[in-house]
Length: 320
Length: 220
Image (cartoon, rainbow over all chains, first blue to last red; front, side):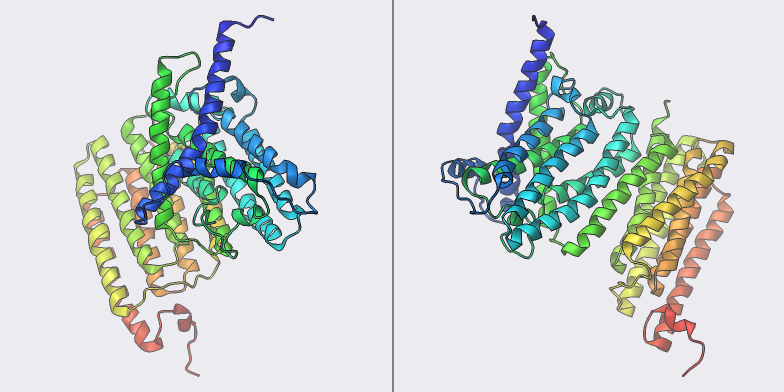
């Protein structure tokens, strides 16, 4: 079988994005933590700290509970795979990549849901109280966040008449400048969903090991060594994926086309700038907000759903 | 469909107005409620200004300036002074819980968008898509008046209702005559003064600003 050069080029672009994403994701997490440290008047552990943590964890011996089943063992790989796949589907550096046709936005939400289901099951697998508690809370938060996320994606789909993320980005990026009030609503809703889904501050605290407040940390309490490393890496990838969805939907300008080598350095440079800005913004937001009670979370996420629905309605009314 | 940049901007401001009304509806604190009211006035004034600019109507400039002066500076300042004097910072009690209020709010928005659709077909002028949003703002403010128990937040709801009507007037009919607008502005100002006196009376009689006390007509 002979591949034509365009296809090879597309695959090269796809591989570049895959590698870039998986290598950059811990950097983004480190950057957010570093910004937070600066804002809190601490010197911080440095941007490269997540890499050091991953390195350390990969060199340790894994410890397993005696009653852990295959599910517990397989989950870190499944979760990591799901997040990597999600990050490969989202147009990060270029549109029309070969993988992006594999799944539209609804399937993308499904990929996130698959990872979440496995991590919740694995948390309950060992049978400790914390794991079950964390899994239940995670399910509570995510079942409220998911419809809001879908509504946000639908609003963008309505504007571009397609549920393919790459088509959405193409429409929004290569369009003359138009103000979309509906997208402003969607952006606000998406921000809330991002905070909730990535276990960030008003809903969960990623830096805590205080048992009463944690959600995500409670679920992965039983993991160690390479399994923990994969899960930590997957969390970084998830944050990266969510921020790239945000960039793709609301700030897609400057993204390259497949085969456009000249546009690639600009696209990567702009991507880095946007990521740095988004990470810093996230740190500011987390410093300003306080962790809320778990029973306030439904109201918070209800607001996200409301905003996303309003965005859809305004799109219908104003046609913009 | 290409529409002018001014209209896009007005659409954005209209959407912001709706967002602010929703934020007011879900707000628990009286201080933030008043600040949101000031923001609403600012957005309203800005949108009036843009309508004035794009349709070249002189008198709308005056009404934009009047809105800015009255609803962004004077009324919030008066309300701030009032709650400082009355010493009420909190307004926790709503009759419905907040998520239910939000759902009712969404239903109201859908209702008013549907209601406004035939009117929008008839209306002319650059801003005809906005009647639905203005109507939604009015209905949401009414909802806020219904669900709040404290007098101060009811008054803010009343003022926000007036803002919605004002927005409907500028968007549907390109503004009322200046005399009418001046009259309404004066009315709102006087109403706020009267409400202030009413608050003090209420507190003196019942020792609280909770208007449910007024449902009792007899002394027991």
